[in-house]
Image (tube, rainbow, N blue to C red; front, side, top):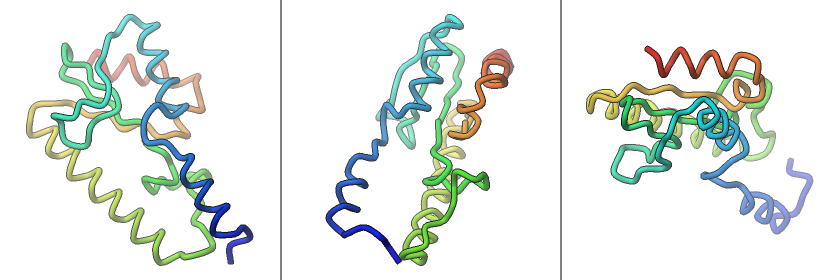
Length: 134
């Protein structure tokens, strides 16, 4: 059962952002420091990717572990309204797969970074370098 009122829950949920999240900004800062220039949230591409590197035909999605159903500890399932959240996350995962496939068919190479990957900075730079140089 939920321990906060519906009004408090609404206020909390209203503060969640889909753009310019902290993990996304960390990745953007690192890419910029490495000398890569990019575009953000291009509306003409499926899924409005977080980071687009047109020169390299590369796309990076920075996905929240909870919202996109990762299997790490950050993606714990809510205790209240389980049916809604299970369906919501399954729909998000299906949409992610559709968008990734559509982008690949258009000739883009796609990398999905998880929020927990971004928190572990030590391997992030190597992962980005390997992706962009492949």
